Amino acid sequence: MRTFLDELISYPARALKLISEDIFCVGLIRNIAFANVNDKHKDDCFDKNLFTYQFIDDTVLETAAFVWAEADVPSVQNMRIKGMRLYITVACHKQFMPLSHQTFSGMLGNRRDNIVRYIDRLLNFQDVFGIGKLILRSVKTLSAPQNFTIKEIEYEVPEFNYRGGVR
Image (cartoon, rainbow, N blue to C red; front, side, top):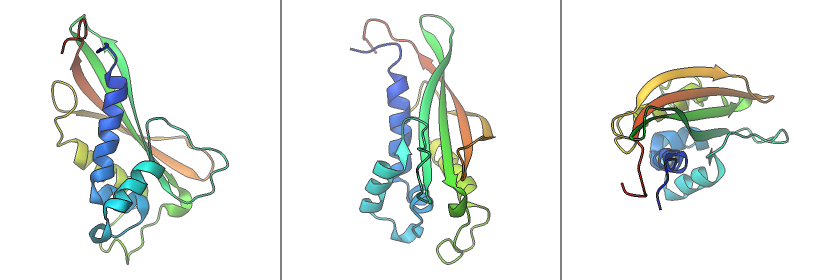
């Protein structure tokens, strides 16, 4: 049975699935040359680095990158239309920020910002969210747990409200 809030579950799940299947995102998150990314790396990335909630345990010592996807409903216009927001947050340990020039030859910038860039490139061409394409609203640097740095991408997604479980 459908509810008015199914997208709170489905949007983050869809976003993380797309990210986990992309060789550029997986390569940067797992520190593997793009040409070497295989299905095992994609599965490991999905299991160990991608989450549907924002959390880094203070005891995490791993120098790694993490991606969180969450959805909010900031507005309900009427019984038929609502506004959804999809948030993709990239957290990167400060020691993991630099990119190896051997692994990522010719790539400029740091790991976190490149993960953000490739996620945006990936999601902006998808039509699996809402009743239209994602609308990029902002990219912000947020405060982070010690030894991590965080950037958040915010998308707006127009969506229908559904009545009585009928889509």
